[in-house]
Image (cartoon, rainbow over all chains, first blue to last red):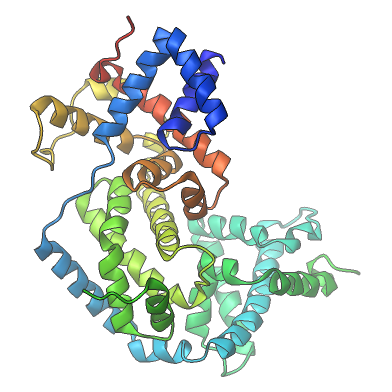
Length: 202
Length: 191
C-alpha cells in the first residue's frame, strides 16, 4: 500500500467502513511508515476535537418548540389534516399533480431555459431533468416566477379537487418526487414521450 | 417520556397529528440543530434553519415513505435547507477554497461554547470549528453528518443524496484540507 492510498484508507478507517482485509494492509503500512503514522495521529486528534454536541439550555428548547408551534398554527392545521386524511386519495391527486407538474416544468424548460437548443427527450425519463430547472430558478427570479405561474395554472386545470397550494408546495420539495414509485415515474415519462411538444413523436 | 415507536408517530403525523409531530420534534431537534449549526455557523441562523427544517418536514411528511430512517430524511431536509441558506448568503464563494492563512490570523471572535477541558484543548476545538466552517458546503455537510452526528457512510449517503463512495471521498478530502490547515495545532509527530 502506498502513502496516498493509506491516507485515503485512514479516513475510511476513522469512519469504521474499512473491510478487515484492507485494514490489515493499512496496519502493515503504518507499522513501517512514520509519516502515515503521524498523519493518523493528527486525524485522530482532529476527530477528537470535533463531533461534540452543541449544548443549548432547556429554556432554549422550550422556546424553540413554542415558536415552532406558533408557526405550525399559522400554517393552518385544519388544512394540513384534511390534506393528509386519506393517503390513497392524496396519492391519486399527487400522481395527477406530478404528471401535470412535470409537463409544466418541461414546458418552461423548453421555452425559457433551453430556447434555441436541441434538447432531446432523454431527460424526461428521469426526475433529474427537473433539478437543473429548479436550481436555475433559485438564481433567476424571472424563471422562478414563470415556473410558479405555469405550475399553478396547470394545477388549476385539474379542478377543485386539487389543493393548489399544497400541490405546489409538494412539487417544490425534492422528497415529493422521491416518494413516487418507479411505476409512477415511468408513467409520467411515458406521458411525456407521447407529447409531441415535449420531444415525443412528431 | 413518550415511548411510542417512531414509525407510529410518523404515520400519525402524516395524518395531521400535531401532537405526534411535536414528539418527533422533541426527539430530533438537537440533532437537527447540530447539523444546521455546523453548516450555518451562526447561532441565530441555525435557529431559523432548524425551525425551517421542521416546518418543511411537517408540510412534506405525507410524502415520507419509510424507505429510510425518519432522522435520515430530516437530515436531508436540514442539509438542503442549509446549502440553500449558504447559497443565498453568498458565503460559498468565499469559503470554496480553504484559506490556510486565515487560520494563522487568529479567531474570528467569540468565546468557545464548551469551557470544559484544558485551554489547549478548547483552543484546538475552536480552531477546528473555524476550519470546518471554511470547508465547501458539501464537504461540511458530510463532516457534520459523519463526524458530528456519527452517521455511517451509508446513512450519510442517503441524507446527502449521493453514493457511499462520494461520502467517503468527501470525508477524505475534508480531512485532508483540515489537516493541512491545522497541522501546527495538531502537533503531528513526524519522527
